Image (cartoon, rainbow, N blue to C red; front, side, top):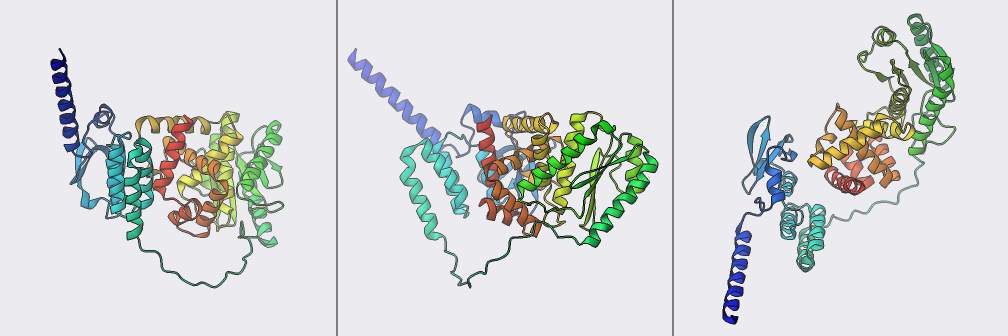
Length: 436
């Protein structure tokens, strides 16, 4: 009957309106969808590292985030952190993990929060996503940005004199003939002592390397060529032109076939703390460095280790002896290994780590603070460095050069990539998800 049909339609409209009103009344970051609910189950809770106002970090599995606190699960126990103790970007990261990425209104709310705390660049990304999801929000997004711009005070204009043209930055500290002779003498003295332990050691000399090898002589040519290929790859990355060399003379490389020989050399001759390692690079006073590799009987694996450590040796001399952040240093060495040795573990480790990070929604921001790395961390560092190099190689070279010249890491990143560490991670994660 027409009357009954009209009555039913009216009832449906009332129920729909009531449901919408109920949803609107829920807290902004409440668990409204099946996907959001899934993120709060213990097995699937996202891992976060929250920057705190005291300069420390709180790391754990994210349980909830509301207007008063953030709750983490740390070591099986619950930790409630008041919002007053968390930096605004930490609050934003926690809330975002509990927000449906397809909810345009929620993305707008995140943008408002960021603008209130002066994070306009990050807010812009949220507004862009909100408008992409719901075009009707475009005017509202524009108003928010205009209001943010109106309240942001422009930097005062400072008149500076015209800069004189500066010569190109040096790629390394140019050595003297005396320093080259001293390094060559030291390398051969170490080799003589090593030969007393490992009689099979013999010298293979190339343009940039003095290789003291206990490997069978049939491998000499291939090993020498690999060292030079590694050097050319690093030189190309950072525009070190021929016939320049970053090393003081030629870089010594010690290759051992027996574990005991490597251990004795490391402990008794080189006086190093790396006897339990597979390989290491040692440098003294910023002028002398050498590479030492223990027994790695798989030739592919040996080549990978040689290129990895060779990259570290190159970077120990590039511009200055100042150490690079671990994620850059190891990521670059992994990238070079994977490029020159396609069957290397470096390439597989990157794919495995990135897949796991995306699948589990792992917060990997800790990578920028970590001094020592585990297998998963090497893969993530490799992937981030690869993304930077393939996206903007001149920018990456500039970033590394600035850090080696003494610029603080965050300032070097801002100058070369115009982003923060958090923004870099966001760009990397989106690119990694697309490439999968």
